Length: 549
Image (cartoon, rainbow, N blue to C red; front, side, top):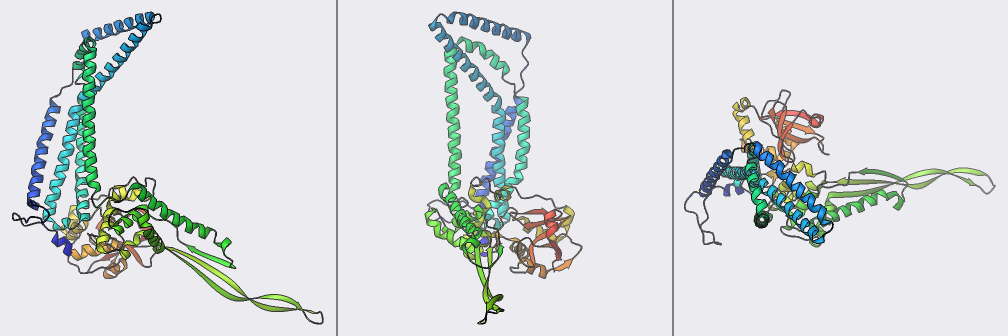
């Protein structure tokens, strides 16, 4: 556990000092947890009341014969009357205008009636769903605070807090889905509870059309005002979140402009390579070119972390050029060979003869190396900047909508793969400790060179951290170093490490993970998650299992 994590532990209790910025005493972690528990209990009580109210609603009886006959008769009379008016209105403009107004009024009444009925039908189930959502949110918050007291490292940095809260929310998502199913069933059960009431109201509506129209108008106004207030509250919450460290601090025009400017640099480079032979004059060409591409979210996360605050496109032009120059390394090597060609010459007596004439033969080798934009942060940033970069990558700057067509978005927005490790494997204390530590960081983003919770991890940094927390002292090893640390084995057991080659362009072992049994591993992918080793990808790159000393 690093020093930063230790400093973020819980306060001791009651004597909490006042902040120099505030005259109010800050609540201790225990007080915040108690308040969260109270909030959870109160929302639980509201949920139960809403469920009781929903349960008391009984479906109405179907219309009796009298109502059905009355409806039929009323419909017949209504049609007959309007038919007669249609006959008259052809000769009377005033009658036609009045009739049209009446039809419009009746249409408004019908729509108003249906709207009221719909709101009445949906209200109980909607209230239950809202109460369930608020209760689940409060429960998740309480369990997070309880877990934070037991594991102070969860409070060590912003990234840890964000990931742990997301993890707990995912745990309660299943409850929410189940609650939604139950709510849907209840809503279906009570879908017709107001039919009888609505039928009784029809007569009143016909007798007092103006009054009812005024009532409907007022009701609609209240609904609209309520919706606006709800939207404003949501907007306020979103704005508060946007101020947080996980949101890109630039305007959309600048974010998209930075991406476009970087793509323009790449397009210029591509055009230079495409027209290389027409703009150069060598005898022979050889090419070794990496693909020109980058992850737009990596680019924006680097820029946002690098500039430490709101930025504009004009302010980051130099940064874009610096990143481009470090990502793409273009070399043009020209080798000159002395070669000979046969030339025919004529002597003074008119006789022809052949001679070997030397000349320079130019061979050009063009090499383009794409160093991968995501590999740069660890080399250009300090720990604090790297932590901000990891936070942006964990949330995509809270802007996954910026590049919906990008191939990169899917790997970030999907939930981490889940896997249940059998209980019998956990009887091994060493493996149980490894798994407990490793699972703390599920959902953390992949950060090249990262080796701590504050900066997030790459594959070897992740395993090095877990091992160091569980009694091993490996320091910071790479994937090849971890393989050398282990003893190869052909009969893997939970707690062994698993190694791969060729997952990216590097010699030796390129990736590693913690084997958890039954053909599964827990590893730092993007994000940290479980993975099935029986997939074609991992099978094609598998190298060996290794047993820890």
